[in-house]
Image 1 (cartoon, rainbow, N blue to C red):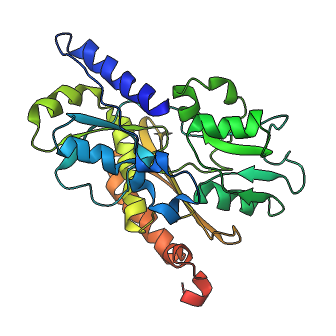
Image 2: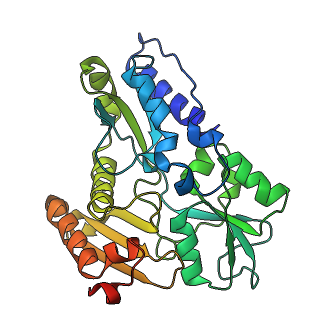
Length: 306
């Protein structure tokens, strides 16, 4: 439902921009949607959600693909493809979803929380070591059902943007401040992807690009790529526009945790929008100096000499 809603939103936006354009949809079930058992990292990582869809574009079976941007690996783009546009970003934060629970601190002692996200799991363990964190995968409707209807878990954490786009906004009533659970890089943003040599589609999609959203998610993805974060990583990055005197600047936060949540390092920096490149590099350097790569590799920074 979520993937369809996102694709239809983009299709409708293109139809408004180009009234003579005929928009057709090709629905593709990704391997990640089919393989719902076990941690995502153990069955192939985030690429499972994008590989088949990207291949359809490369094969000419579709002109463009619509992705949740956080599902696109932050390293090099698949050859022959480019992100043509990043539309305006929705809410970036996670929400706590459960029956009778309103906050992480309010969860009962030893409560079972379901999540398939190493990022969410590690941050929960850091905040509440007493919680029992167990795997929960499946599409967003399945996860909500297992928590709210079937009561298999006391709670789960889900992206507010995904809940809203999937028509499940009634479950967004308990947002979690990013200072508590920092979101994933690209969370709340969509990526419209097409072939690099398809100049017609590129030109058609370009007006959908939001420059502020694009700059923010690009900064986030640069940090993830530089620190070699992947689907195994308990890593969160968020770039947000902030006021810097009389102008707009960017606040960039990065957080890396050990999988058990016991070790956590974070960098929080701001800079004018014209100095985004320098800001990104500074955050990367600070994270490296504090031992981010050692933690991501499963080693203590102290033992690594950081």
